[in-house]
Image 1: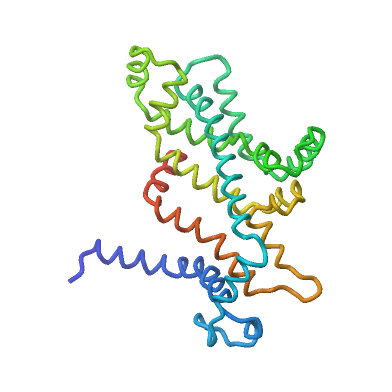
Image 2: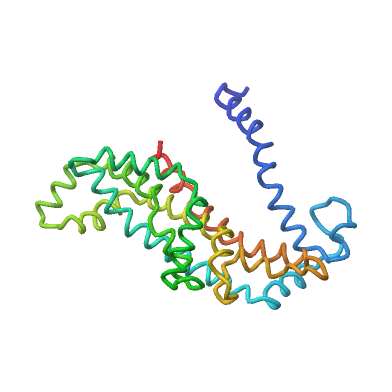
Length: 274
């Protein structure tokens, strides 16, 4: 006979299953389309496994006709550069807000909260004009610098740093560590789950970003993965949906693997934001 706890667990799974299926369906369908041939793309009935597999052809086209590996490498460079700058600027700010008493601290933290409410698209035109005036358009700097400071990173790390005992900070000072050394040698390692959670969110957001690269970049060699997918569009012959879906799978796969590898720490890190 099932206990009340077991019954409630079954009920939760029954409630969550439709939501999980609804969320996973587009990804499964994307994988299915990446395995279909062009003529069967719209003629075959709805089924997960195609009748005639064309996966090798589609993935080969995705890697051969456009420099997909170069696009993926650009994505790694851009996302890695953005994340490094965000942590470099956010961790000291969060430490000051969490562990230092100074006039205006509350106002500064309120400013961070307000910045979280501003859609990044609003800043597109000022950023474009500023980078154009500085001669930085069509470069890695144009893709990285606009996202160098993250209000969400400051907020999340401030909340995480507040949970670290003050005695640990005082002990570090007595040992002769400077304030910056305390940030990088004590605070950041102690708040590793929050750092990892933000890292995943930052990488996913900028890996999938299309709007800003579409505005700031014209050189094909600097294209990020989502921008590179657009190269499969052909206004005369139509879209090559098989290679298009194959390239989309290649873009999404690293994010899924990274999330699954860090799932537990990711969820733990997000609890600091509540």
